[in-house]
Length: 128
Image 1: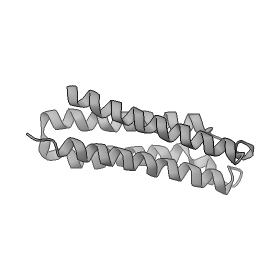
Image 2: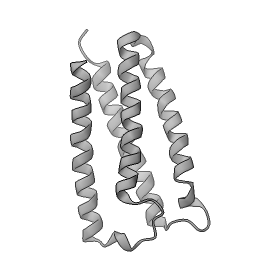
Image 3: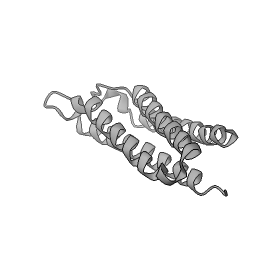
C-alpha cells in the first residue's frame, strides 16, 4: 500500500504544478473574462476526483489480479469520459461557453488522461 501513497503523492504534485501554471496563464492573459459555466478550480477538482477514483480502482485491481489491470483502466476511463461529457455538455450547447472554454475543458480532460496513463504504466511496470 506504500506504493499507492507514492502514486497519489506524485499525482497531487503534478496536478498542483499544472493548476498553478494554468491559473498563472489565465491571470496573465485575462481568461477570467470568458463566459465559462464551470470555473477552472471546479474543473480541476472534478477531474482530480475522477482521476483519484481511476487510480484507486487500478490499485485495487492490481492487488487482486494483475492480469486485468489494463482492462479495468480502460473501463473506468470510459466511464469517466462519459461523465465528463455529461458535465461538459453545457459548453457545447448553443447557449454554452465560448470556444476557449471548450478547448480548456478538452485540454484538461486530455491532461488528466495523460497523467492517469503515466501513473498506471508506473504501477504496471513495478518489479514483482
